[in-house]
Length: 169
Ligand code: K1U
Ligand code: ZN
Image (cartoon, rainbow, N blue to C red; front, side, top):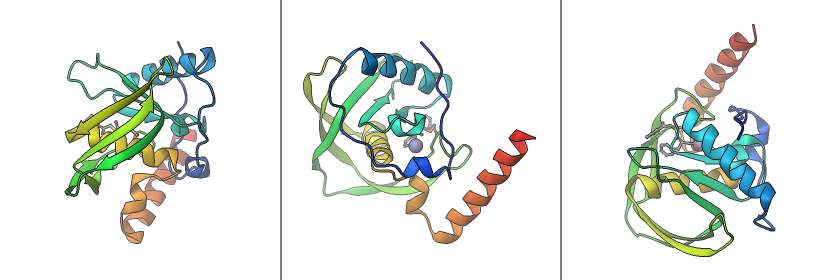
């Protein structure tokens, strides 16, 4: 297992659109374990392959209290979403220290392959639903700050670039 570096906003690579995973093989299973280790170490509840600079449709999540119930979605597709939406506070491991509200569907149903390549239907609400929608945005090259106002986004970009400059020196 290995810890993978997480891309930080405003890295342009975060805007890459991911391609489908062609085959769930040893390479993908190794990537899944590395992403789960990276996500847990960073104290996140989700991680998209895009964030570790792999542009394939794969996400890992764990919204359990004990951090012992990982969920892997390969080639996820939302097949149903609720009519109701809510504003939820979100964070992102690629935008450390920034939290803000994003409107999301309350519940979604997602079709995806698991780590054995088997097709599954996942019914999600609450935090899992929010996390799935956030991670699936990453696969489309979208970071949650893009839902915020241009002024907020500009301030976040400036703050991130300053923090990255200071970390280098
Ligand atoms: O995609 C990511 O960067 C992971 C992100 C997922 C996420 C958190 C909150 C709402 C939507 C999506 C994180 O895990 S950020 C870490 C964090 O802020 C958090 C951790 C536990 C519970 C809630 C938030
Ligand atoms: Zn994120």
